[in-house]
Image (cartoon, rainbow over all chains, first blue to last red; front, side, top):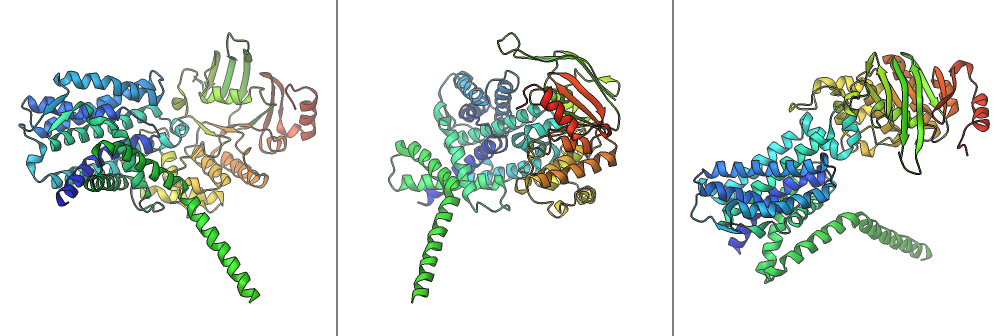
Length: 299
Length: 253
């Protein structure tokens, strides 16, 4: 059980980076960017390519992040310049990346056990915690800058960005680049933890990211004090631990994707209807009070 | 100040629904004056404002602002000289940000957005002063998200944000149409005060004849892309305008 919790925690931290990336597109820019399903393995394959060329793991991981930003730039170009709908732009990039990923190393599965990894620096959990915390702090600080606020405003009200004298497409590009860079980084780290890069490792990853964000949103829902990045991180960790416990209890790993989707459905509907449910319960309680008062009066 | 020269604009070109909104349309807007543009739906007043603001491009013609032809500038480039308040109170603000964050964004209008922190404490006193002038108590709600404000409060904030950097030209696009009469009155009063305070040249679109006469210096009535009436507001009565509406205007229901 302990090792399962530790593995879930590790994976949760890796997915926290993914979730922070998807948070930028899904929550800030209000764009459903499906290209992350290609960017996640892309990061892993780029890392595999450079580490196998004898390049330092920190540099290889950084190159994976950089290449991820280029994938984001590609998607952003499709919808800002070529006016293709964002959803389709993401799907097109994802489809292209499938071939690109196979081309990078010429194989669909690359073992990485014999190479150095970023986790040679220390225990996995500590290295990951430092990376996740650094990204969280940098992202939070970035969102407090003039550029960061315009990124938020672009998703909130594009016409305000224009009336401030700025081109909103520029901020969509920044957001998409940053998001996909983080997703690729997450993929590169996953490859290093599991010891291989695999072409299918990105399948349904968007659901994992959304599940993390949505679970994060339900934590003390009305509190303004919890930052969205913190929510994404906690959501990813909780999500992975739920999944880990489910497998430990005997869930067939083949059923995991269905469970992923069900988790998203349950949390989304909870977020959508929580207020209604609370009101309904209050109403019923209220009715009971009225009935009780009537009874008391009658007595 | 603002000259619109030989403006032409068609919509749905080469289709059965082709509409010729403007053909060689000319209009001159005087400096530091508030010009109200009125007319029935479809007369071209919103199109005119969109063409001046840059969200719609003209087919032909020139838009000359302070001696410069701005026709080739993109919407966001024109925004450095033009402030705009829309009919929808949410259009001029960022609803998920606080009043302070919105004011700080408006304060950067026309400047380069960098990686410096947006919120600077030394500007807050100025924002409070500007909000106090509105007399809506918004200065006490700096950290309230704008989505929690009423339509009137949001529109007042939009107005302050649009006027904050004293644009050469202020465009008011039926900015009180979505508000109740009492709130609408308050916003019109505040609009007049701001226009006077910053000496802004203003173009105001309105369906409210009374407001148009009361708050503008000049009334321009459009019909099918042509000027039907152009008079100083002081020489116009509400009855006169309504009579013209009844007799001459197309599409008047």
